[in-house]
Length: 168
Image (cartoon, rainbow, N blue to C red; front, side):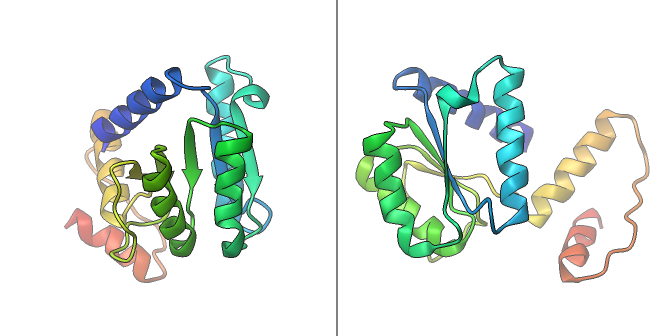
């Protein structure tokens, strides 16, 4: 929800102010279209704050290679000295990132859906929206805009059904 998002942004700001301020982005940009959108959104956000992404964002394209996750985390932490890691699009990479977040005491935002197989850590935060979360965000945004009705066009699969069910 909106308060959780604000809390996450505030926490990220506080944590990066204590360290290098660099953010490590660990996603499969070249093989996963949503990763490219995430990457571009982060760049746009940093620029909107007048922050030079080349100085504050370290991007590693994982190429969807789960075996390299540990190596990539080591590179971000020890070579680039990032203060925060964002990644874990897949459940396997999320598991590895969560384990390393706990061992290295580094805040990590996981982008995959929370899964019971992922070890929870006080340093791990899940930023993936659930179907209910997306529906609630749409409802809240429309209420703020004064809309009384919402139309969902062409739901075609099970994911859309979950989204619709939240409105009922």
